[in-house]
Picture 1 (cartoon, rainbow, N blue to C red):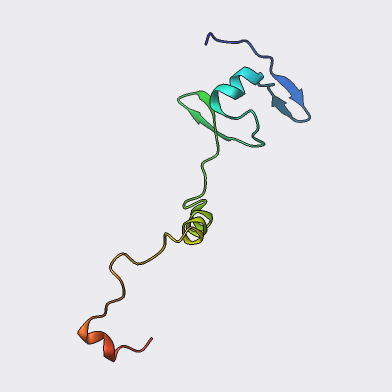
Picture 2: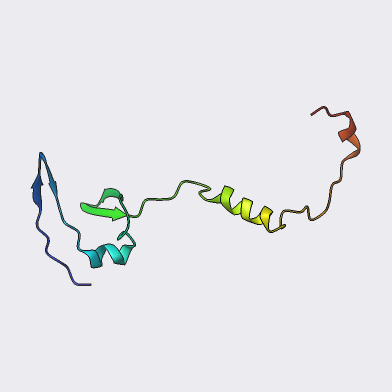
Length: 87
């Protein structure tokens, strides 16, 4: 995509830029309400926010369990020394 001219506008004590919809669509931000902004080598960079670590794991595990896919592969087994352990 060619460079696009945008106007920097006053918003209270700050400044703002209206981001065109095609630009937002290209990076997957058209439905987003937030983004991560950094300055890298004098360039303002907007990115989709990173998902938290292990995001969605609990829901995925529930789906696996509901489908019966959470059975032990090797079954229960213990070690000889486990009898002495108190849990």
